[in-house]
Structures are given as C-alpha cells and as structure tokens.
Image (tube, rainbow, N blue to C red; front, top):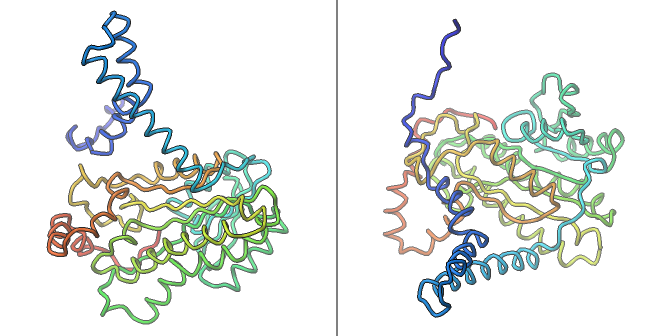
Length: 352
C-alpha cells in the first residue's frame, strides 16, 4: 500500500488571514447582490415598508450598490475603457521571465498559444516546448534591449504587451553597498523599465488598439525598509515613473497612445527565491503572497484590456496611510510590524 498523502504540518488557523476574510466578505455581506436579497426576503415575508429592519436593509443595499457603481465609474475615468485583447494578435514581452512571477506568466501565456518573448540573462530549459521564445538579454543594458527588440519584431511581430518583472536585491545596509551593487540594482530594478518602455512604446503607439504595460514594483517602494535602501529607492522610482507615464499618455494626441493601458503592481512579500529567507511578523495581517495569485490577477487585467493598480496582500492597499501618522506613532508601528528587522537573515545577491 502506498504511504498516506502527507498533509501540511501547519495548524488550521495558520491558513486563516485577514485577506481570506476580506475575500469571503466581498462575495457575501459586502456584495450588492447578496445585500439586496435581504430586503427582497423581507418583502416575501410581507414585512411592511415602514419597519426598521426593511428600511435598514434597503439603505445598506443602496449604499453598497452606489459604492460599487462609483468604483466602476472612477476606474473608467481614471484608466479609460478596456481595449480589445485577442491573444492571437498580441506579442507579449516579459522581462525577468526565467524564474518566479515572470516565468509563471510566460508559461501560462505560452500554453494558451500566445506569442511570448522572455528577456533574461538566466536561461529557460526547454523554452520552445513551453511555447516561450527566449532571448538572452541584460535588461539593464540599453544596447542589449535595443538588439533584443529588433529580433523580437523580426521573429514575432510588434510587441503589444510588456510585463516588466525583472528584479534583484542586494539586501545590505547602505554603508555596505559597493558602487557596483548600487549600479546593478538601479540598472535592473529601475533603468530596465525605461529601456523597455522606450523601445516598445513606439510600436504600441503606431497601432490604433494601443497596448498594455505592466510595471511590477513593490509595497516597499511606498514605505522603505532598513537594509533595502537601494531596492526600495528603485521601486519608489517605478511608482513615480508609472504615474508620469500615465500623464504623458493621456496628454498625447496619438490615438494609439491613449489606448495604451497601464497596470501598476505593488505586492508585499512574494513566496519566491528573491525573499525566501524572510519570515513575516504576522501571517494573519501580512501573509506571504503566492506568485500564482499575483500572476492570475495580472493576467486577468491584461486579458480584459484594463488598466489600474494591483496590491497584495490587503495591507498593501492601505500602507501609504502610515505616512500621515505622527512621526513617533509611525516608528512605533514600523517597530511592531517588523519592517526594519526582516532583512537580518537575508542571503546576499539573490535574484527573482
């Protein structure tokens, strides 16, 4: 007889997180359809209109519906209407696609028959069998990016979807960083986004259907962290660059530019080799995010032709509000959260 299937050694409550509770609530008590079931059920029982229970339930359902409607209108005004996406006509370029989040996205799109080009210095085994076109390229080198872009255009056509996932981390205090550490960090984590966008944007703008640009930043770009000064500075730069890019595209008279959709991704700690040695201070409030969940949400927005922002886990959506706290309270919160002590056991020079 085969041995019984091994189960996780974690207790059941270890899988309970605030994100899970929020997800369940969004499809139950915070969903407009479910909210309207209550007053409809009350009327089915012939509850009079003037009863408090009926008035409260209708008011709650109305407010929830108005909130959802406002959210949709807000997103439409901020990021524009969705563009039409047909994977048969799209050419997808993924930087840092030889591992982690980038490889997950590349493999899924490859299995779906899309034209996928991966730019990375690390090789991908059996790339062709996975439906991936691999191009060895240091995305922190503008000359190599330009050469790769020419080859991709010749082999696959004009790129229409750019997913910038490339990233490295040194994990050293500021005074221990060497000039080469700093230079390499900014070349890969920040400059590569400038190089790929500059090379591939003209092709997108030439098409009336535009394209999609995905910028993978980090929640640390919003709050900083000890022993990550170079990494967080680059990620903060990506957030600012993304905002500036949106403004430029909105102002452009080019129709293709106005149809380019942008997606900013600011995840918390991902369960990838890049931060494998880190432990989260609170698994309930700050769970480690599985790359497959992030990949799924990115591809969902890309496939829908939408623009917007993705933040994981839940705390990442509100982390910026920490900066409005009084300085003494802010540093007390950072201390309790363990933001500035998380890198103590981190390995040097790991890549995504």
